[in-house]
Length: 240
Ligand SMILES: Nc1ncnc2c1ncn2[C@@H]1O[C@H](COP(=O)(O)OP(=O)(O)O)[C@@H](O)[C@H]1O
Ligand SMILES: [Mg+2]
Image (cartoon, rainbow, N blue to C red; front, side):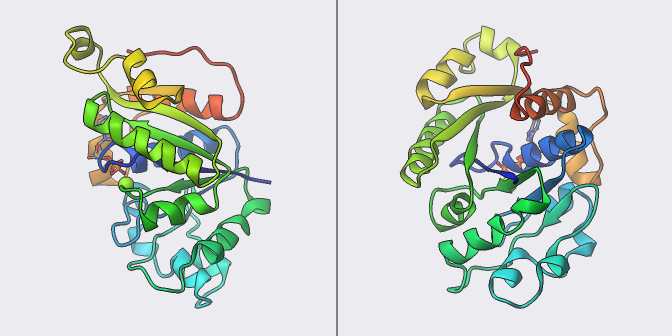
């Protein structure tokens, strides 16, 4: 049975979609079967990050609304992907959506749900099928506060197991007290730390080219450490 993990943050631009693509790739490299589900209705991006936007015909909304089969909607690429619907519709209820997400459980080891920004309906749809959550923050007060709100909301929705990832971490500004340090991020979100991803210019380049950051780029190494922790391995924390 797959572990279903929603990746959320409250605020947009914190790196949720980049994280989902990076960690999905890292899990796949470890031999895990991964399904990434883009839940950013109307603003999907995972198809671009995986370089498969030309292959999107159906999305998971089509499965929920009985317009196609599960097999037709899954894009088989480097990582199996379900694209997000282009718009909301009344038929996309929490119950029906959760049922569809969970129906993939027996075919995968991990299902990663890429949540949209905000904590309203799109976020709730992303969270409704999840067992666990990862909240992503950048080391600044605005993002940390929105992450804390998302954490509260996830608990309200019944998700008890949530971990924190600090993204776009940079040592120098933290030392100069221009960014929040690791302890401040943990204290102010109230969430146990899963890992740290450094700011890495390759992440942005790859969203343009639909390619993968190099094997030894700082973000790839960080996503790989986090993927290992997700599978239960004990890996030292690195923040460089
Ligand atoms: N670790 C990182 N280092 C540098 N840029 C990053 C990093 N993570 C994400 N980004 C960039 O930040 C922007 C927002 O990332 P994205 O993953 O789309 O965020 P979200 O899905 O939370 O809106 C993108 O331009 C992306 O390339
Ligand atoms: Mg996104």
